Image (cartoon, rainbow, N blue to C red; front, side, top):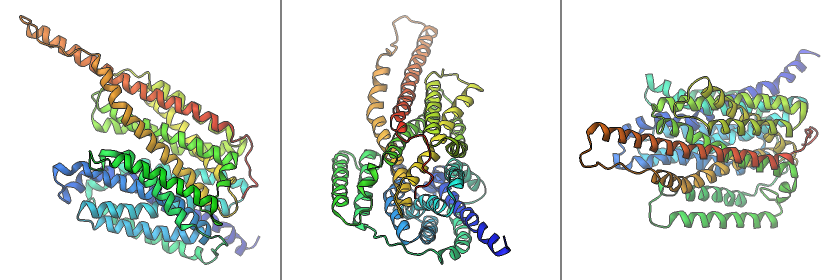
Amino acid sequence: MNRQSDRMALRPGLVLVLACAGVFLAALDQTVVVTALPDIFLDIEVPVTDLDQGSWIITGYLLGYTGAMPLMGRISDAYGHSRIYIASMLLFVLGSALVASGDSLGWIVGARVVQAIGGGALVPVTIAMAHESLAPSRRAIIIGVVVAIAEAGAVLGPLYGGLFLEFLDWRWIFWVNLPVGAMILLAMLPTARGDRRREVTVDYAGGLLLGGSVVTLALGISGDVVLPSGAGWQAGLLVAAVGLLLLFLRRQAHTDHPLLPLGMLRNVRLASANGVNLLVGGGLILVLVNIPLMTDTVMGEQPLEGGLRLLRLTVMIPIGAVIGGLLYQRSGYRLPVFIGLALAALGFGLLSRWPIDVGDPRLTLELMVGGLGFGLVVTPITLAALNNAAEFQQATATALVTVMRMVGMIVALSALSSWGQSRFETLAGQVATPLRIVGESDAVFQERLLEFEAQLANAGLTFFHEVFLSALIICLVALIPAYFLGRKPNVGAA
């Protein structure tokens, strides 16, 4: 092999390294804002009475990320993955600059939406680039690495933000994206020259209908958290979400160039991958929300400890994603997904038996088991979507399976918020409030107060145990669609 052919052989790998750098940068910004919120509020002088509106900074990113992803994936399949990667990175960099220059809550929220539309598109586009440019024998491990990088960025985001805030203003978290993004763009520009437009028509109207359905669903479920209370917003938005979804499905059935051909979902493996990821998203969000909440409340630990406990779980997800890719190469889709779901269920079953004073090594080991289980599922599910999509639908299929995970999270959060408060009130209502008895000494009364507080803490602990058991059940239910993924990888698929 001559020197020129050596350079050509290295080119796909170098392109993917550059693309993954952008994926990691965008993934960091998914969660970096969690650490920066207090500084942002202080800087833009958000009144104390309006602090609850700060959730829009997080919700806005979620809406942009999930709402635009299917359409951006389809545009990528039509106009070329490298070209749309470059356009998405430009949009992400523009959004970063807008966030960094923001001086009001509304400006920052809008800028975060722009940032999310660009950043959210990078993951499915990069995975589609890997699928398109690599031989089937190399796809699994590389796609596993891409998924792991995306997960690792989200895990490290709060730590990344915290390090910046130790030395610099919060705005520099976003300003630094400009030079880094510019370097990635300059390196990626030559790849767009050979990226020809495919003979694919983009159904923009269908993309707007699907994106609108996802956005209104997320807003409707968020309810009073981000919307004015008592005005019927929640019910109206949920009805709108269903209506937009029905209009989308009707359009897909009648248009000559659908965004999401309904025939895709008749593919058993593709439909199963979406079903598994829907359930995985639901189980995952229940755990991510409630581990720090339980630690900070009934266990009486500092907020930092809740974050550190969650990190023990999330750090294993990217590791599991790589291992899942390796297992897929040896055994296909079903086995790594089965093992992953079983480990996740085991981990959450163990969490549901935690005492209030749980400590290491038990705490760390059981959290790592659950995180590893989720990680094992991610890569085979992504590959099932890719390998079973039709020609020029790889990015569309990847975007769809990602959105299904987000929808699962949204639905599970809604169920938790509607059931959780009433369930905790029921458990707490069984604990009698101590009243001072005439003639009772202070020591005896204080003893009864301590007993009351312990019983109340146990009621809270029971509630969290039930939430973890719910996550366990969701993982076990996910084994049903996972069975239909089949055993052998479909390496010859487009």
